[in-house]
Length: 286
Image (cartoon, rainbow, N blue to C red; front, top):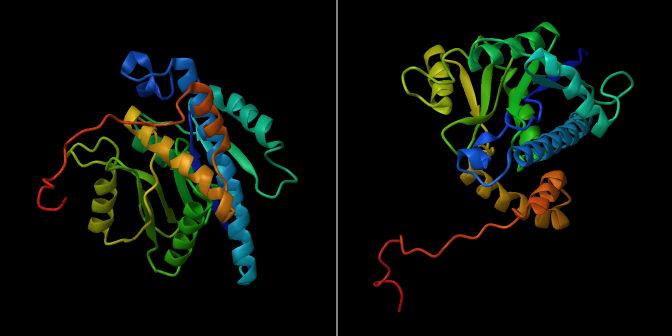
């Protein structure tokens, strides 16, 4: 039986002050220093990697019981190429050896191009050339990502492998974009025209429109929010707090690094002022 190679392609910048999560900084209307925004991003990145590795284990156990032969690997794509060694060192510090005698290898590659579309296409192309059968891709700024999100993504890709022309999977974010997207080797698809679409389409409808024009199957995954703006951060603070509590009862895992960093920064609780922006209730309340 041929071993199916499943790649989780994680796009991540190196956590550097002033170059990551700048919309959370004071200079751009946020509340964090550039250094603290970078530290928070590092915590989110490491939590996402931890979830991905745990999901690989869950996928392997589920497929083994069904008699399937699958291999899973994490590919972290960063840019520019000068940052690759530092990214590798960061991951090794946290997770130990990345390749060799490890259950789930972690590879660091660099993507290049003149636009988001070209960077994504370049990284996908490198993974296909390395022998991937399925690619599930995402960003590293999703602290509320769960093992089940990743497992569902690969399960959907495996279903699409039974379709002649393959297909795509995608999970929306909270702002008309996409947090997870991927497809199978047989799928004739790319990222051209998706990011900063000249017609004004945001990322989610741009992917759907490309699939619709090509008559390619698409499978919808539950939304996974990311963190770009202060509103995103506040939303995710409530999510990771809920995850932290719920893990006591459902056996899942919470984003402990992100939680610890939020507590250190004094950003682990969200409260909003009262408001009266609601539908009239005089006919409802007694």
